[in-house]
Length: 275
Image (cartoon, rainbow, N blue to C red; front, side, top):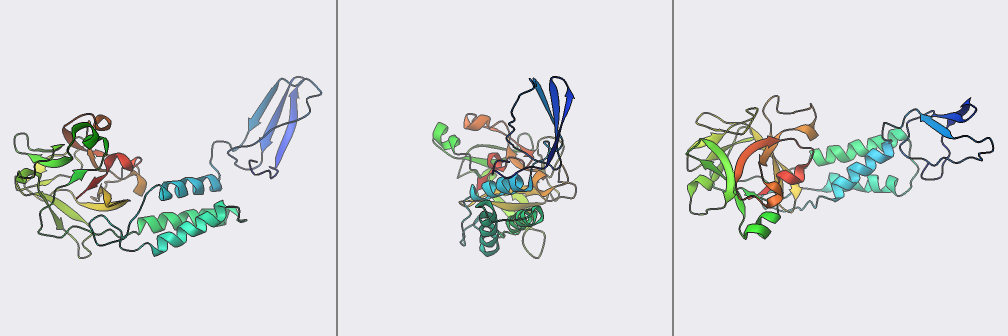
């Protein structure tokens, strides 16, 4: 394999000019070489190459984690405590730096890291205060010179995003918590006196009744994703596939306005916001 360790396999000749190599276990990358004294022209490899190794899965989880610059503090979007996260990160680093570990131990280290990230507690906004929710896509300010913020459009009854307007209450939002832990909330617009909806199967709408339930997921440097926590909000049954609030038609920061829609959490950097 890529570390120089032998891989268990069988090799047999299929005909005069081809052979079949079969791996006993799943493997992702390998080197294959042999003395071709018999004129073999085709080698067929079977078994296991479609599934990533536990080590590769741990590497992916680790790379995603260290790419997010979590910060502790009391400001909105910061993380309250990184103790468990740092311990899980250290364990992953130990294995990735060459410490001998079985597949079960590697899997346990990945699950420990994923659980630590899922357990990060975010500093939430205060209930009863008004906030601007600003898109964190950096090219918006580079292209237009001002931040882009979420607002409620009274003309079409839908939320959207465009140039921030600090004197317009339609750009001001309140977080109304629905649980004692103050983790899940509804987004209430000060200007239109309406809530932002949960998933509609399309773009969001504003509603006078209780809107969708959401929570904040830390994305580092006081940025966050706004994840929908309504029942059935997970689009593929996993936490990483949960719907979240997204600036539709951002066009990588070159478009100055758009609507608000749901987006899958497979690429959370494209759906980051800050207060």
